[in-house]
Image (cartoon, rainbow, N blue to C red; front, side):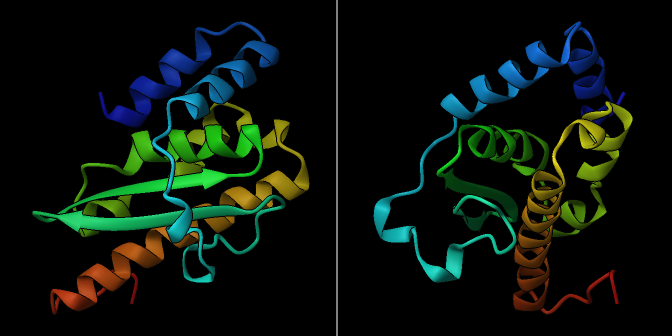
Length: 144
C-alpha cells in the first residue's frame, strides 16, 4: 500500500466532512512555520486566496519544506502536502499526484473553487521546486 493509499484509508475513517476538515486544520497546527524573513515574494504560492509561502530545500537528495498560510485551512493543506511530499527525491515528487488524493477522497468537491485553485497552485509550487532541483543536478525533467 502506498503512502497516499494509506492516507486515503485513514481520511475515510473520519465519518463527516466536518471531522475531515477539523483533521486538516489540526494538521496545520503541527506544521513547522516558515521564518518571517522567508515570507518573501519568491516563496509566495501564487494563486492562493490567502497568502501562503513555501520554502523548499533538498538535503541529501530528499525534499522538505517549511511553510505558512494566513488561513487555518491553508496551513492544514500545506501540512497535508508536506506529509505527502517530504522525504522524496525530486523525481519522486514529480511522480506524486496529490490531486489523486483530493479526488479519491472527495476533498476536491468539498473545497470552494478558490480553495481548489489554491491547491493547484500549491502543487505547482512544489513541482516547480522539484523541477529546479533536477535542473541543478543536471538531470532531465520527466515532464518535458
